[in-house]
Length: 195
Image 1 (cartoon, rainbow, N blue to C red):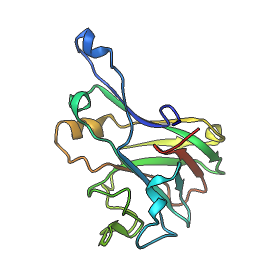
Image 2 (cartoon, rainbow, N blue to C red):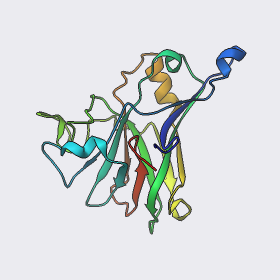
Image 3 (tube, helix red, strand yellow):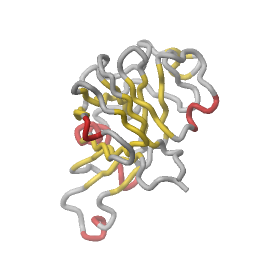
């Protein structure tokens, strides 16, 4: 059994008829999610897209999370708000303030074939660790109160989702990363997480 809303995107609409508001907010599960790490390059292991947790680590051993959400049907309609909701499996507090940053991917990734160096094996990322817009779509600080298990981490990704819905930007997904100097270690449930 999967964790309810372990990883999801909540999409909220405004000024909709009552019938449509019954599904407001809409919870979307990622269509793909994967951790890419600087300690593993080349062709990824077969199980990389099937792991129950996704990892974020800064510092020397970098781990980043790539996710993609399909915005079709109800989710394709212009929204008022969108929140990326993550639930921690484990989170080890850091000794200094750090941020989780969400960036828009500028090339599509593959849950099965992407790694730190490979975009979709054998094609390579232009920049190892992911090709993404250097300007963060949003960020959230992480501190000691976020340590432990079962904690919610919510990130407001409204402008990014609105740009995808309006087709102003292509939807190749997003990448989450920590500051390079961070000593934080965060594991969140993936879409494959089980009880």
